[in-house]
Length: 408
Image 1 (cartoon, rainbow, N blue to C red):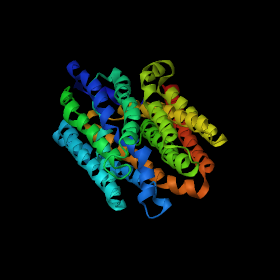
Image 2 (tube, rainbow, N blue to C red; image 1 turned 90 degrees about the vertical axis):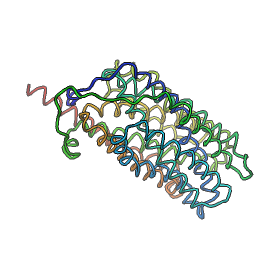
Image 3 (cartoon, one colour; image 1 turned 90 degrees about the horizontal axis):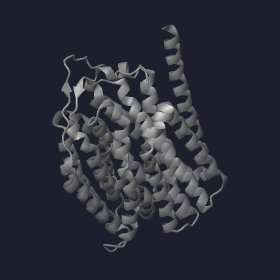
Image 4 (cartoon, helix red, strand yellow; image 1 turned 180 degrees about the vertical axis):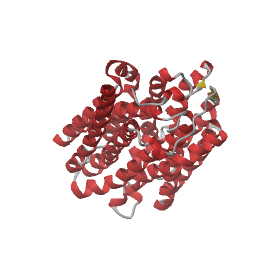
């Protein structure tokens, strides 16, 4: 895609560890149940426990804040002791946090519920590293395919998470207590039974070591801005709308939990099912073209959601929102490694995820307040400037590449 530094990767990866991609996809199917459960019932439970309506989406925001605060420490720890040990440690912590969340809901203590969800968010930062672990398990030409395959595990999580939350919500006495006990069970399956198949990837230098650059030097490349902002805007737009949807549907418009669950499940499935086809899309239109399709899907989602608030409008808008997220996020993820060397990978991967999580946390926290303050339609329209920003960043990068080619 031009402007990258992949030629300096200087590492050989054994083909035997390519099965890591499938192992991580299976693990993600269970480990990633935390996200749809928090999205589905997190703000509803928050509304039941919070002292005011404006704090209903605070737990969802704290889930993202937890991920933001642990992204850099977890990445640096992986660099020091290896990915597998960090994966295992985070898995154990996630199980404890899910049980703590269940007990907090049962006791009706909002502060402790928020704290437990925050810790679940911290472990989610480790889950987000799965895509990088998969990309390191294959040759450079298969990186986009590896990232897409791992995200396929999210399809299972999209349906399994909300089903667990709804099917077990009355287990344990108080409403929704069982949802988090069920999450603890899913996390046990992920971390203690499936992750045994993951093999640590050891990158072997090819002989020429390139001195690692500072973050500022790395960000001097327009390519890095395109890649990072693709993830930031993918999560920013998606999280703002997705976090508000359960409250808008179930609380403000009196749709049933079943209808709300169907919309959220469909949305999360739409986030990951396109991963079956993203390698083909990349071959047809390239990474930039795929990101453009993602931005177009976002725009359609906003138009449909703004048009009306019937059930099918919610459904079509949230499905398109998921597709847009997939194309934009995978495009940015696949582009990112072209702007750093192997010696810079942990630092840059962590920086990328921090940028994503900070924005996601901000919009998730604002989502409930905006919904009650300005309404659903204005909330949707506020996403349009973010789409325009990404278009301008891509255009600036492509213009620079064209100027370089003309100079040659």
